[in-house]
Length: 408
Image (cartoon, rainbow, N blue to C red; front, side, top):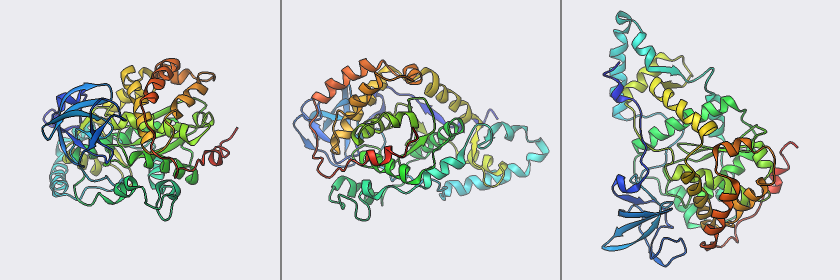
């Protein structure tokens, strides 16, 4: 077992892009800016272009590009090279997986002679007391709202080049191993969350939320992720972001929202945690361990190995008890302003929502894991003042249509 431990999923918590080498342009919105401000003068950068980080300032990193120095938003670059978008629920068919299955088969042939104690320690079943993968699979199966993603005659009819590129530019690079590892861990954390809270299985409402998220994702650096937004039943005011693109909003939080711009601000905040790697970066676990675990599980179940389960305990504690570092929460607020303004939403959506929350009750859960609301609002006002908003002519605010579906 000790010899196998090196293959388990590893997380590298790196706070600075300077420690990670080059960064890569992942958004058509990326520019080499003269100042660390989104509306500063600058010239466009090419998708996939490699940049050398020099220093950091808030949500911006100073880089060298083609012999020139300038600033670029962390929202539009990634320490990961360009990769294809992961397809949820699709198992690997790579040669590595085939070899792993053969090794796993050889291993299990002699397992009876040694006893199953070793293999039992490798994994815990991803069903039962801790996980609800069934509800998660339902969420992953919900199609996106065509009116928000502009598919099949939506309101922009693919006139928005960001959205068009987002859906049709993923034919080449393979899905990165780091992305696969991140999604695997995020799915497990999301399944734990759904064991604590009931998922609201309203396809139309969920599809609408995912349409808003997809619009925001088109300008972010995480083209490799398939963002999913779910509604969870709770009287608490809170929202949660899991690695790999899984975002959850409580029903009580949704009741406090007054416009689609506010909704986009909340989703943008949670997306910011994911885009900015606030859960760390991920290395792929060895296929051998995954296949061994799968062979030991009953048909139809999903498996979480023991090392991952231990890591999930810590991440779950952060979601519900300790919260993230204040720096990360404020960065996610700034990310929300940047993402929403780049696709045409009002940048004051999140601060407007937080202003409502500052006068509300039932804030214990949010206060335990986030900075004081008044501090966040003050910072947001500063961010908003340095933002120019893209044209919002194509955005139709449909929030009230869906808010009416929430139970009083």
